[in-house]
Image (cartoon, rainbow, N blue to C red; front, side):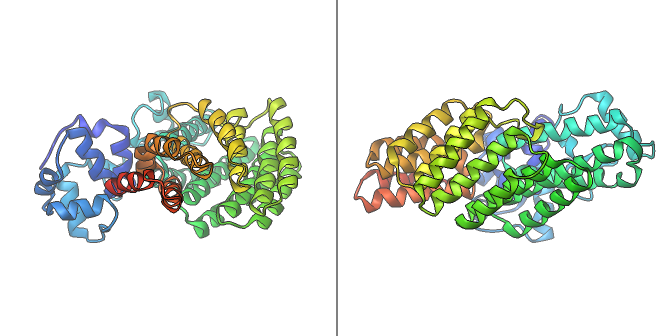
Length: 406
């Protein structure tokens, strides 16, 4: 059995194991240990082609026997796995070391053991969720979904304890969890699951009397409609979100720009630009962004405006806006940098700037492969197709780069 205590302190590897994302586990373990597929295969009893097939998601780990060989061969700690000895962990989310201070973990443990829910414990849970939102920006939804779902299941068990003045705040926290889980399902292109979580989030937002979360959930349903190619539904849901009582300026700005993107998807440039201008005015003066919109600001708005221009085939404006947006993104936003970088490559391809399209695509291809599937990954394939259709040799180079990671 492979036992290296240091390798299993890595948060990304621990999160992948907790989510039982076996392709990510194998890849991350090999990178951290600088091992070949053959060496890993020898440890877990798989041939090198089988390891490659799992890592590249051409083969799923469905056999209990294969799962157990991976667990034993790599020495995966039992507390990271479903059914493992996790009694000492206050919440499954703590497979990411250092996320919560020790005194907070102790408080969560005693509440789990029967102590009454109180404000300090609720605040610890809110901090935990906030940290996991930021972790997802770097690790991606494939890794974080299982961790957050398990965390939510534990938190939801405390529903009956939420009484008196903390009841509404606790239900709002449940709404935040549901909204986050919906986003991650959407990010993995699982619309039915996303819609189910959005509906839960909306119901809990109404129950807690929190209009801003209700508006956020409706706005994100608009984003889901946009991602499915339904411009009309995107417009309707975005308008409903913007009109929700209690919506903050930041949330209204997000909703109005979604309306603009819906119009752009429908090819209505005048309506799209009118809404985008309105949203830009709102976001410029917004000072009340809720904690779950921690990322939202003028850089994100510029990038989203760039996507609308992409729909309208306004290549120059798309390039300018996407460049401005990307320049304001922190390096920790790997998933978003991969997505908007792929969009920028698309805009360059549309403008006939093949070399710039290839250079931009290659800058984000690794992150697109690791944390940007399926959306950024699919967009890079769209870029490659556009370059090939125009007879640009850079299209074949991008295809080769994608194939190397596929």
